[in-house]
Figure 1: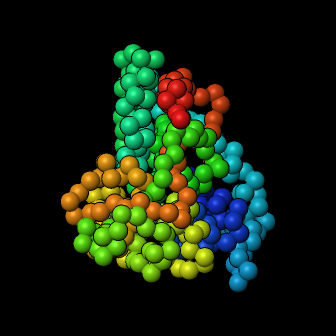
Figure 2: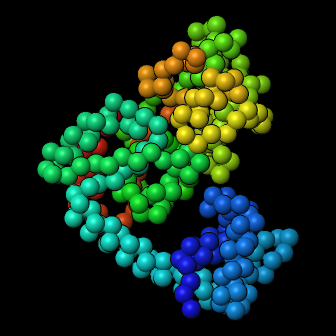
Figure 3: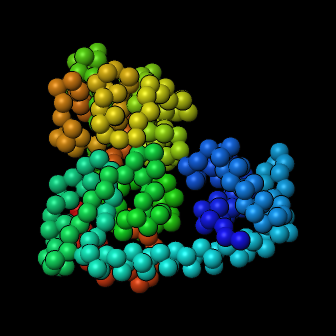
Length: 296
């Protein structure tokens, strides 16, 4: 009997959280879908792994046995997959890096150029990540590192290097009444609908609706988007306003969108992020060294 490693990862997360809702949020899947996957694993093993109650999910005896064995199984598989990826990268001389929006702003190209000097013949392949699941490619091993905005889901599971910090501003349709003002306070925006990332993005979504500055007031969501083009269109259409790094006014300038200075919210930090593992593959170590050279 073969078992998909995805099922084992789902099982491990539910076992760690002891709660389906929290596990589903952490895994970026719906609770019904996660329940179905756990039942599929139980059917394949021919035993119940959890007892379910209003208090959560408790491991059965067989569940405890599986929970003790799963980490070694997944670690071995992850190690094998990393070895394959490393061999593939060495053969193709390509370092794969995912990014959000404007990556590391004006630092992106100097970092890549510095890496190429350290690794002649190598190139960097950039892949845009989704705001709904910004770490998906890192978790799957499809990329070696990522340029991400802090905070992001499961941040404590990865190593990171802060590269730059910049203020946040507010983006809105050019015809919005508030666009007549040159600067705003976040308190002026509390009743406005926001263009937001999906709920599953967790801390990343909360940061970009400034949940910590709302005094407990719920955000009004006018639209949910996962990519810059959709985000810009929703703002221009008047579906909502959005917080953005001030660099967005340079990278995403449009006549139908106004960017205004904003007080009352914390700044945004861009970091290079990579999986925690030792030793690091030499090309990745060189890329981190190049990034460190250009970090603020």
